[in-house]
Structure formats: C-alpha cells, structure tokens
Length: 449
Image (cartoon, rainbow, N blue to C red):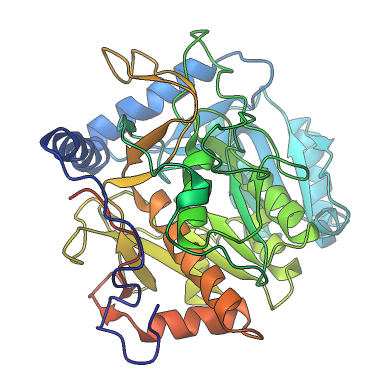
C-alpha cells in the first residue's frame, strides 16, 4: 500500500492476488453485467423482478408483507404493508391521535431504547397502500414528521435476476499473501447475516461468532434451494477479509434471504452493530423514495451514532441518478461514504447508480469472494449452480464495491496507528481519481474483467 506517492487510483498496486482470467469466468461476468443493465434499466423488467419478490414471500409468517406502489410503467417503490413511522415527539398531537383512531392503527414495538425515543411504528395490515400514503401526506401537512416504512434491498429497487457464479478460490487463508495485521477498528456488516458453515479453507474463521447473526440461506419456497440473496452477507464479508485480513468482522442481519428488509429493520441492525463496538459500517443495500424526506428510521439511527463511526453504503444498481438511501446521506455528512461501481478500466459502470452525491467508486464487476453451500433456485438460474462446502463465487454490483472501500479503510487504520476511520477514508480518497458522477475512483482488488 502506497498512500504517499501512489499511481493515481492505484494505492494497492500488486498488493492483492490476480483474479483467475479464463474465457469461462469472463463469460459469466459478461452475463451478470447484461442482467444488471437489462434487469434494472428497464422499468418493465424491473417491475417483473419486484413481482417475483412479492410472490416468493407472500403469506410467509416470518417475513413482513411488502406492498408495491407507483404508476406504470415507472419502477415500483416498495414499503412494508400497513406500516407507518411517526416522529416520537409528535405522538401527543391531535393530528396523530386522529390518524390512529380513524385508521385503527396499532403501536408496534421499536426494539431499541434510544431509537424508540425518536421513532414510533404504527401498523394496520389491512390498510391499502393508497390510504396509507394519504395518512402520511395528511400528517406531513400538519407538520407531523411521518413516513412509510420503506423496503430496503440489495439492489436498492429490488434484486435483479443476476446471480453469483462459481469460481476458483484463493486457497487456504493461512497461505494468503497479504499479511494479517492486528489493531484498527472492528467492521460491522449490516446485510443478510453470515453463513454458519465452518469452512475448511480457513476463511471467515470466527466471523459467525456472537454477536454476529446467521444467514439461514433457505427460508422461502422452494425448499432445498438457496433463496435469491442467500450468501450476500457472506460474500461481502469475504471481500472485507481479503482487503484487510486481520480485521475483526461482525455481521448483523437487516435483510431477509430474498435481499429485502425495511427502513426500521436496517436502523435497528445499524444500531446493534454500533452497540457491539463496530466503528466502520458496511451497508450494501438501499432504497429509493417517492420524493419525501430521507428514510425516517435510518436518519434517526445516524443521529444516534457517535461521530467516530464511518458509514460506507452502496449507491445502488439502478443505472440512473436517483438518490438511494442510506448512501445519499453522504450529501449532508462527511462520515457517510456513498460508493458506486466501476468497470475494470476504472470508468463508470453504466448499470451503477451515480450522481453528484456519490463520493467513491471501485471495480464492481466480477468480484471474487467467499460463498455458501447449496443449490441455486431454478427460477433465477437454470440449470442451477451447485455450490459445495467452502465455496467461492463471482458476483457483480455496488454491493461488492462497498466492502472493498470498507476493507481499505480498515487496513489503513491498522497500518497507521491512531488513524480514525474518517481520517483513513480521507487518506484513501486522496489517492483516487475523479470520475464524473462516480466520486473518487480507486482500484482495490483484482477482478475478472
């Protein structure tokens, strides 16, 4: 690592192993990119993806029901069915009392002492989306901060049908050529959780220990198949470990195995990570909005987080400039880093969300990392790939750009004692090159082009 006089955009030249470059792997990455471009750039295709998500979790007792809204043919937005969030200080107002009475809203517990002091959740599952939106508008018109409980996902607008692909691994962790260093600050990954598998190649050893939370992998039908986002948190975790091998990693669950969670669930998981002592947060998920204020619960969580915590979040895979939260909080806060995706030549990836609010970017196509044991769902990949134990995969998306930046920050903190995560980000930023709409671009890991 060279932070003093690096080749611009390449602070880690020759630090990390080259990715395997074969025709087979190149073809797999090309297919992923085509799906990212097609599946999320076209509103009609995007809405088909949304309907797959809704159908797969319909009537599942362990998951929040999701409602889509928005006019055709525009991309659909998602919220948790029948739930609204209200500023806690406004609960004594007559407007809130009237809304609760008129709509048979029931208070739902916010399971964090400090967050519950800022945000209240009310629920009526039978309330139609149009009516719920009307309630929110009426409360806002009376100066009561209120919002839908938006759905967050691994692709910000619902997962694409782009899937990981099996790849040759990096060998045993003990033989990894990048030195494992001690010190620095714990990384908290807020995602789908982490696999409970004890790998035989030494990677991710101890990451699943408490307080980390487990990814169950197969919750939704069909049985004996990996759900659409199964292993997402495991893949992210392996990327962080490749970049900063000695860093402590803990993983917290905000997203279900289909890659969807909620504003409130994300806020709660973020606070669990901070309460566990994590100082660098990896948020490889996001949501788009209907023109209102930023997501209420995550905004409240960020207000509760100490200033020495760095938040690194995915810009999304929408191929447009629509703001995605929590990444777009970077507009107001220097301790939030929004990360877009680049191609192998450090130019902007067309499928990546971008804009003036994006602060950083790195290569996000053909990223190799740890994966999970299981067989893919035929609805997404037919014939399905079968992953053995201790597997590795190639995956593409801004979800996998974020952990490279997170790992780089963690490594800088380890190598330069006394450097805070926010300071480490500034040091990393200084090594980058400006790419319009994609912030400061740096290359971290070697990827399959």
